[in-house]
Image (cartoon, rainbow, N blue to C red; front, side, top):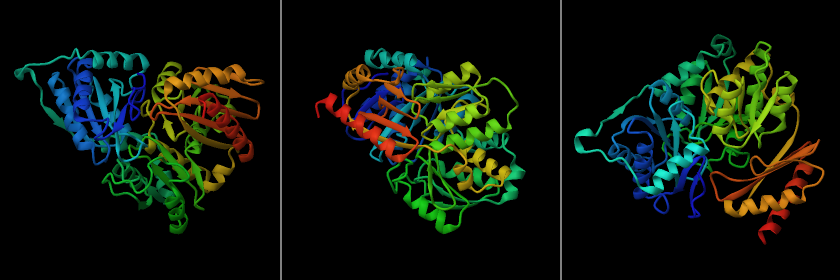
Amino acid sequence: MSESKTSDLMISISGVRGIVGRSLTPELLVRLGEAFGTYMQSGRVVVGRDTRVSGEMVKCAVFSGLLSTGCEIIDVGVVATPTATLMIEQLKANGGVVISASHNPVEWNALKFFRSDGVYLNADEGRDLLNIYYSGDFVRKPWDALKTIETTSDAEAHHVEKVLTILDVPLIKSKKFRVALDCCNGAGVGISLRLLRALGCRVDPIHCVPDGLFPHTPEPNFINLQDLCRFTRESGSDIGFATDPDADRIAVVDENGEFLGEELSLALSAQYVLSRAEPSSRPVVINMSTSRVSEDVARAAGREVIRTAVGEVNVAEKMEEVNAIIGGEGNGGVMDPRIHYARDSIVGMGLILESLARSGQKCSEAAHALPQYAMLKTKIECPSAKSREVIRALKANAQNARANIEDGLRLDWDDRWVHLRASNTEPVMRIIAEARTADASQALVDEYTTLVKKALGM
């Protein structure tokens, strides 16, 4: 899918996002439901949502559109995105819709579209859906061909039970971990508590009232998780976990209240899976913006590393294609194919806890044993159409770097890298840089921020 011309309506590979009451209107939502119902050929569609206050309005509008095309709806309620996608497979549905704007602020909401294997629509499939949407050529069933809405309340239980099958539950229980938890009052509250308690953890919750009133900006980054950092240290917890509002991403805080971040969630999970796996040629798949620490971990285990364009579907499809042992995105998106090809915060929690239980290390010790890098991220307001011009200009001037233009522009040197790309979820250009030191990363961010602004005429 491509970006909408409306600045606060984003139509992309990650779905359709907008501001409720402004760009994301009931009329638009009904039409999107009609388009997806037509694309699904009036089949079975799983629908789930996060805790946002606007979620019920959005759901009702989408239901109307889907029902008008003759779809049978299975409403799984307020659940994490990975729970909903797992239920698409479990219930043998034709596809699914998740209503969640993920890390966007509270005034936003969104529709994410999935196919029968519980994976996002890819770019080609998204274009097909968008063509239906714009053409308005929708299936419309008569009154006697309309289906009912089914509900199910066991989605979280099914998800947790499946994750527990890949974990050494008795080992984790024996450690009696104390875990601080910040779910930003989102959809991860119930399932995170269910998993952690099944693992024998004492849970110290903060911001775990699932009312959709976000106590901080939802992006699970250093700035927004200072409450969790303080709370983890002051409560004497062994580790702190944070999820975004739809709980497909996880960030980690160590026992000292130090923010380890989203990148190390994937690195710690991957390192543990690889340490326990039988020798094989199964590779690790990560995206272009993921830290080199995950790449180093994989190579240390003798595994090939394959990078894809940013976007969960790109990683998922490549993982399935190459039979990857593990993969994910550095934004905290741990993807373990034993569960499903999706970013999943509770998989990350389980793997990290089992890793600490087996090694006997403190969380800080495990993190400090990893290769050390400094990553910095920034963003500049920029429509995607303009970003393509910027990328072309910067690539033409790139010197002494290995350039990759599969997803924006990634430039690699032996000791550092920078990635510039148009966001799938906001009208901005993201600039991500990583080097051995914070000063070197900052210098890279400063250099390319200046170059981007110059190319934009700012």
